Every structure is written in C-alpha cells, then in structure tokens.
Amino acid sequence: MREISNNALNIDGQPMFRIIDKVKRLEAQGQDIIHLEIGDPDFDTPDNIKEAAKRAIDAGEVHYGSSWGEATFIEAIRETTLRSRGFMPDTDQVLVTPGANIVIFYSVFCLSNPGQEILVPDPGFPTYYSAIKMCGAVPIPYPLYAKNGFRLRVGDIEPLITDKTRLLIINSPQNPTGAVTEAEALEEIYDLAVRHDLYIYSDEIYARMVYHGGENFFSIASLDRCHERVILSNGFSKAFAMTGWRLGAIIAPKTVAERMMMLLQTTSSCVPAFVQKGGLEAITGNQNTVRKMIVEYNHRRELLVNGLNAIPGISCHMPGGAFYAFPDITSFGMSSNEFANFILEKAGVALLPGTNFGKQGEGFVRLCYASSLENIKEALERIKRACHDL
Image (cartoon, rainbow, N blue to C red):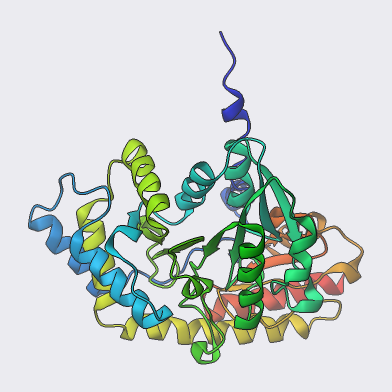
C-alpha cells in the first residue's frame, strides 16, 4: 500500500489533546483530577442564544445558505465592529466561518506559498505552527518575553524579517499568557508591516475578555479598516461559551475575503443557518449573562494568580485578558513538561507545559481559569502541598 502524503505527515495537531488523553486514562483508573488544562468555558451557552438557534431549526433553517454567511448576521457583525473597533467594514469584507481555528489555515493557505516565512508568537497557539507546516510555509517564531509582560514588541520582531517573510501573526489578548498589548506597540507593529509590505493576521478571539473595564484593548484592524493588509479573526467560542457551536468570522481585504470564501465553499460549503442565528443573538441580544461570566472570570483570575504567587517558588504575571495564567516554575529545577507531569500525578491537577506553545514556554506552565472558584481553591491547595515536597 502507498504511504500517506507529505502534507498529511506535516500535520502536528494540538499537543494539549495528548495531555487530555493521559488525564482521561488517570480518571478511568479512579484518580480525581481538577481540569485547568483546556480553554473550554465551564459555563453553558446562554439560554437566549440557544433559544434563537432552536427557533431557527423549528422554522426550517436547516438547508444550504450563502458561503459568505447570512445577510442579517453579516450586517450585525459590521455594526458590532463599528461599536467595538471604530469602523464599519464593507459587506464583502466579512466572511462567516466554521469556528475561528480554521481561519488560521485559510489565512496561511491564501496568503503564502511553500517556502515563504510566517512570523509566529512564541509562546503562541499551537495551531499557528501546524497550519503553517501543513501548507509548506516556514514558521519563524518571534519571542514574547516575561520582562515585557509577554506583550508584543517591534524590536523582537523586526530582526527576523527577510525577503521571504509574507505574514505576521499577532494575538492580543494572548494565549497562553493572557497578555494584552497596548495601542502604541500595535501601531508600531502596523508601521513595521507597512515598511516591509506584510500581511497581519490579528487573532482577536479573546477581545471581549479584557479586565478592568477593557480600556487597554486595541485592535490593530482599526488602523487600516482591513482594507489593505490586516485580517481580523474573531469567534464566539470563548466569550459566549459557544465552543461546540464552531462559529467565527473574519474581516479582511476584499480580494483576500473572496479567496477565503471560495476555500470555505470548497471545504465546508457554508456555516449552518441556525448556528448563525445563535451568533446573531449572541451579539445583538441581552448581554447580562455574558457580562456575569466576565465578572466571574475576573474573580477567578485574581484568586488563581494571587494564589500561585503565594506558593514559594512560583511567580506569575497578572494577565490582562483571556482566561489563562502562565506562571514561572524555573526555581524548581524541572522542565515545564516534568513539572506538569509531577503536578498531574502528585496533585491531581491537569495543566499544560509551556513548551506546548513554543520554545520560549520552557520554564512556564499554563493554567486555564475556566473552572469554578471552588475548583481553583482546591487546585491551589494541591499544588502548594505538592510543591512543598520538592
């Protein structure tokens, strides 16, 4: 039998799911595990969103639709963008997608050729690397340093640009660190992209999850309104607790959006209309439940980070957004992977080694506070006891 393709062999997937497989085996053996490893909200999707989708199903909205997305939903996305980012994109700049994760692949596939280079944050979301390799392009990691609060800095990016560089991927608020990069730094990065004629893929999946009133969030997309070089990617999974719905959207230059639409058309046909009706309700309906979730995440953030900093040997920046903490564990003399395995087996707390997110993640681990206050309190006690034995 012939071997599978090189393209298939270049797919890395997401390393965190290998951790989940190990956790499930331990649970099957009867071990009690507190889950702080995966970025899946423990909240249910708000009722008004679910009811909107149910009504659409009952009304027969279960057939093929436009590959661009439903017109009423696209209009709502345009208006929401005006309120949140200060500009209203044109209708043919907006594409509704089956989740935000796949947009990484769309962008790499449509904007780079094999052998071209794409700048990727390190630490950063693993799908960036996997999608780039799968398309035959070359990921070039740029470092995010703890001394800068893991925020983007143009001086850490510019030396890595070559005549092969095609695309710069940025993410703020950031996974895995929770860092929120300030407007001034993002303006400098945009100017850098102009000087070197680069596209920018701005992953803004956590844009609604910024704490202290959200005054620090700034979208780089507002600088060119996605007309020339910025692709703004967003989704409904995190802020609206809709991970299983697989619903996202992009705003991009028209020619880029059209190519992405044709790729979506080829691979997925369209996003289900009833899912889009849920998304429409999410951004236009009552926001009380969503606000309550953000308030709760803020309480959890403060409990977790303050609790980690109270454990001898651990230090952790207070993240400005998303729902992750990224503590430094180097004082224990263990690798990130060794520490994560130790805490899982000794304390029964599942977290991720920082190296799941790149080489710069060595010496760190990621904890997700999309879990209850009670679970976080118990996890902190278990980690404290386990670290005391080191």
